[in-house]
Image 1 (cartoon, rainbow, N blue to C red):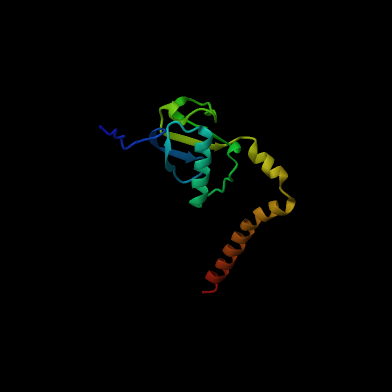
Image 2: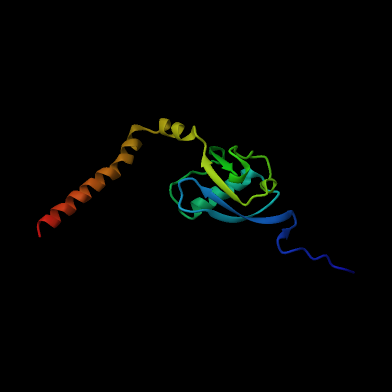
Length: 138
């Protein structure tokens, strides 16, 4: 009886790919392995979970419907969430927040949370002022 030996980069569902997903505004890409038959929506979900697990900034959230995945070599159109990631023949992707989602988030926040966002600027001004007082006293 002859045993069938699978290639190292082939799983039961097909080839596995190491992909890089660059998040707009983040320091560097996220790299992880996916099956080429995996849907774009699942790749977005995995990228968001990896991004959060690594503690990267800016904080994105976890709703995959708020994001679009682009393939820079395929043009300017976002990938459909229902197509497979291997159909592009690429391994580098760009993850961006949908244009309308940021406006909806700020409209839904209370005035208290918006003023909290401004407080780090006041803290920086206080810190700089306190440093200048200490330096001038020497």
